[in-house]
Length: 420
Image 1 (cartoon, rainbow, N blue to C red):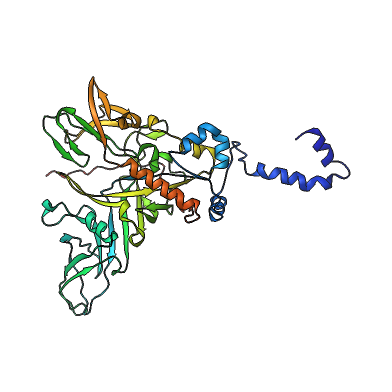
Image 2: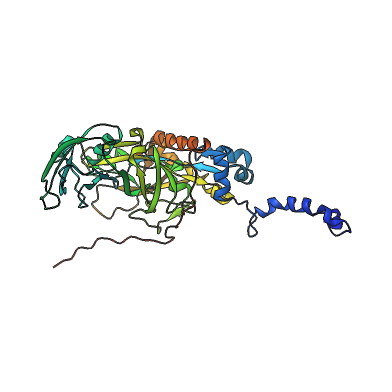
């Protein structure tokens, strides 16, 4: 403030200028008194979303915006950055309620398209685990395919048995169901959105079939599984904006973060502010009746088993420039560790590579060129982030402030055998 303004404010008629003075101060109050960075609130961003004025970019697009405008200007203009991932997430499944038949049955042994799905729950509730197999595993069909078929609107064969009791007299039911026929159907996934993951290779002389795909002998290939610069937890690495209650895109419908995911840990080495290996995870929930089979696919991983590929998108509110800066991380700044899957345990880091190197199609290890491929679809991740962006721009999707943050420090326990 210059000397002329100070004289006017303290002059005899200075009160005339007070309203102008306070209007000029409004922008100042939106700046943190501690570090001078612009700050926004969830409600401010949601108001812009409701009025269809929110400025939204994907995590891929935002890097170019920041290069052109600078971090300060971009943080002031941008409201939301959308992220996305689309890959195999084995620790997933669905709760279903079939409704009661006449006469009723308490189901204790349940098959959906010949896949065992008993959840040990109430009379007509069950949990379909994504990795459950048919009694003939060679069919390449499991719980993940049941979930996909239901979301795709297909008819699914239900056969269930029960002990028969005075209140649930029936002992057997054999019928067909669709997603519209049953009451509740929602995904509940204990562990999704792994924050980074390792690179798998095989130094042995035989082909290996793993959850990381087919690994050829003598390091003829290497596989990885992450959307890198688009991945949700690599854009908010310390979960500043992601917690219980965060509103998300889940398999083409709306969902929520319910808890930290299983195998959640924070004690992983970081480079450029992000972990170089598997670290944080999320537990997610969403209504299957909103979902789209385009973003939810049953997988048969040769020689390993069944998994479920899911598209997950998480919006990151740009509350300040530091959050935006973390959203600008690029594939050439994110590292993953190469490990040997021919070892049954104790797999140590052989080398580390950026996702830019991995996506180039090959890496080099001790003079040997190794072909690389991804189990995670970058094309699918881009589609997820783009669709979520469209929802927000059209005022169809608002943000939630987390009701609880997840642990800042967490480590894993190992399963220890009791030896007699």
